[in-house]
Amino acid sequence: RASAGAAARRPATRQQLDILLSETQLRHGEQRRSGLLLAITGVVEMGALRRALQRVVARHSALRTRFERTADGRLMQRVDASQSTPAVPLRIVNARGRQASLDASLAKHVASCTFDLMTGPLLSALLVRMSPGDHVLSVGVHHAIFDNWSADIFRSELAAAYAAGAAAAQSGGAAQPANAAQPAGAAMPAGAG
Image (cartoon, rainbow, N blue to C red; front, side, top):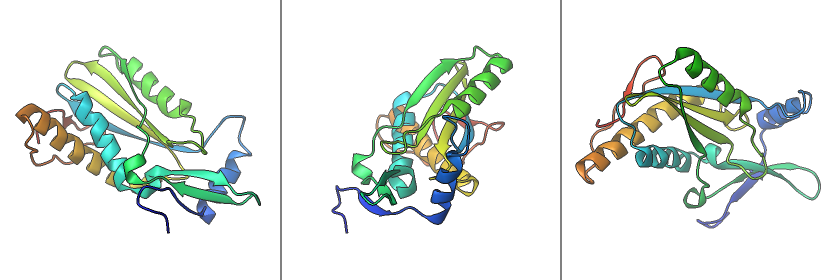
């Protein structure tokens, strides 16, 4: 058993091995990835958004997973301790209210996510700013650690963590109740819960 601050190691699952093996048959550099979108209305509190992403990753060991090979060639999962999780990459782009620009940015983000399976993290985020009060968050995740069943849980936990953090920032520290998750097409308020 690993200590609280150490990474845990365990064999890769059969599903993970299948996904990673299938990548060897794809064109050079292609990876299996999943993506999800959340709409955020209002002014985005970037610190709260970054902390919310980290909080969800810290909560779920699958999102802290990366892979390594043993000396005898076996593929192992390496699950980082929640307190030593690397920051989730978060980029921001401006689409200036153009739907075509939004669509292109989102498609490019998920398609261009390349993950180093050995060093991680195996997810990244892109915030597309349509206007000062209209944003879409795209999260790309390697399919070896995330599937479509996980998307609703991720969305709802991220929305709750962000809403609480943004409310706390606006009120000077006291967290407010969180909002429900809002997939793209609906809107997650940027401010309070």
